[in-house]
Amino acid sequence: MSASPSSNQWVSGRYFDGRSSSSSAVRARVVNGALQLEVAGKTHSYAAEQVRLGVQVGSANSYLHLSDGAVLESLDVTGLQRLSRALKHSGGDSWLQRFEVNFKLIMCSLVAVLAFSVLGVLYGVPWLSNQIAYAFPVELEMSIGEEALETMDNLWMQPSELTEARQQELLTAMSPYLRAMQSDYPAHSLQLHFRASDALGANAFALPGGNLVFTDEMVALAKNNEELAAVMAHEVGHVVHRHSMRNLVQSSLLVFVMVSLTGDVSAASDVATGLPALLANLSYQRNMETEADDFALAFLRKESIAPQRFADIMLRLDPVALEEEGGAKGEQDAAGRLGSFLSTHPPTPQRIERFQTQD
Ligand SMILES: [Zn+2]
Image (cartoon, rainbow, N blue to C red; front, side, top):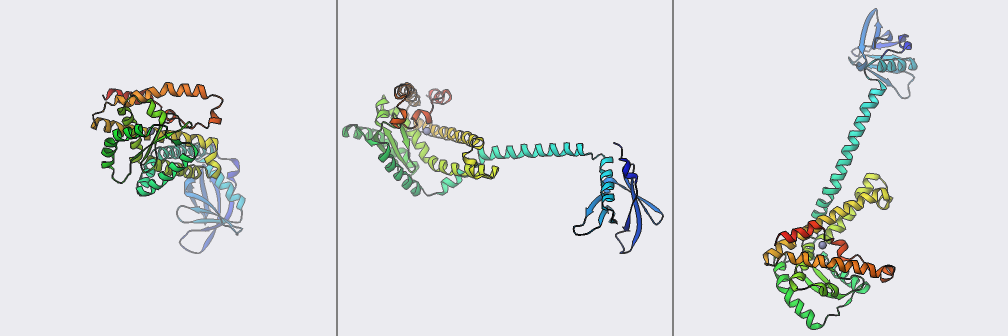
């Protein structure tokens, strides 16, 4: 690239060699991409990268700082700027190349930040939530669970319509399993409850601390106690892995991460940032379901119950949910039906296969 023609013009000023306080008259210009100085009859030459333009705030003077510590001072500010520009243009350091370098740098940084954020959200947030959730005492979870049960009883659940005898029979059948699981996790208090609920349909869920709720419809769906034990083991998996607490912490952390990344408090409800948050949450949910499945599988094997029992009842849920969805269409909102067991526990082929092949 050629030097601009104007750079041949001389700029006059004072030269400080950087060692003594005295100065000499100097004139400077750019020749062949290098700064040429004439001081006391001698010529000095500096390559472009050896020269730095400095503008002193509040002063009429400008400076060219040279790599050997010498300084060229001049009142001709525009002249020095012209020299500086000419040096940059003549060097390999064109604006386009600088832009390209910067662009690559920016893209690299952007990719790095993105990758870091994605990894952070996918692995960092769950890991941290895990640490935090386990730091909370189980007693706190139990009191949250008690309140949750009370709230659900007020809003969506009624006393079970199963006879007292049937409930007792089920509790007796399940109690050895509950005791076996409880013995490994003495801090938790695993308790089985039966409820009627139009809103929840055929459902089973675990509340923080260890309250396990089965709806009458879920009990009716089971062909034997082993199927109920299998579902119960899955739910206990959620309890002992502190999933409710982790969910709570994760959601808060996720909002915090999204706000940090976007610098926008409304980001949490934004579609653009809400979607990644939603996807992240789905991934957390899937991981938790896998964890609960792992727990159930290990338990069923230990108790010599065929893992197939879990697959059986899961697959039987499928048509029930379809029928309900068809029947409740249009009046779904009025009925206030909540998410079904199926929506949080989709019997995906991978999940079912795990329980079928481990017989
Ligand atoms: Zn689950």
